[in-house]
Length: 227
Ligand code: SF4
View 1 (cartoon, rainbow, N blue to C red):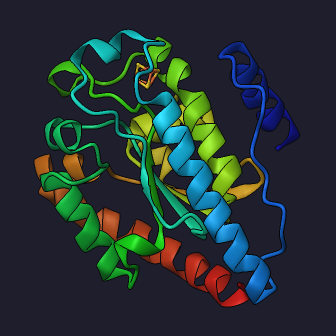
View 2 (cartoon, rainbow, N blue to C red; view 1 turned 180 degrees about the vertical axis):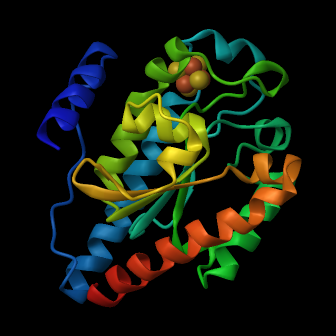
């Protein structure tokens, strides 16, 4: 865990992000929690505004809207995908196209409302023709995601698809292996399942995704009950 955090902090530093937001208050006091929620929402909004004209990688050239992320600033779970598609690029919101509708259904199937989690992507600008983001693009954009994680402090991750899983887990393993068990990511559990866009292209994989989601649900529900 320590090694992963140090590596990510080094990436943040290389990218010029040297100040990380940390929560100042305990989640276990109602009044403190309300203050922390407001602080986090405000900081996330400030960060989104500060980075929206980013040109750190070539993906800015095809950008209509910067897709920072959205959801509950106090989320127990962060859902992380690959990058914006056509609809996301137009609307500036993650997972709002056809794949986004499927994500909503997947979450509902395990009794999670979309606004209960925080949703973000590895890259914040749409890769041309929905190609996979290149390694250099992922690394350029990763500090923004790491900063979001620092702000939100989720307790569990749901990684949607190979690009998100391989990038964050620093792995070259195929999905079959990545999906087999939960992973340690920054000291929290990370579950891997198929990206909804992949499920739309390969409906036969839905059965396997359902198994992944059920395993995730057990742990997520237990964490929620602790908070
Ligand atoms: S993808 Fe990320 S790093 Fe690249 S231009 Fe967009 S915000 Fe900047």
